[in-house]
Amino acid sequence: MAKKVVATLKTGTGKSRTKCIKMVKSEKTGAYVFKTEVVPNEEIKDFFNRK
Image (tube, rainbow, N blue to C red):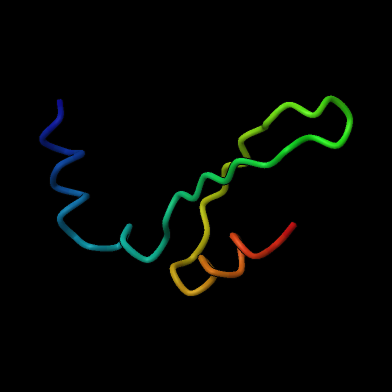
């Protein structure tokens, strides 16, 4: 029943947040790890500048 999902996406309430994915090198193993967060649009630059 995808009609309900499409109808809720058209309201525009979900556009105030963005899913951000950042690749970070692990201190223990040296391998790269992906950090994923859903942040408000105003805090996107802060998310990528954090360590």
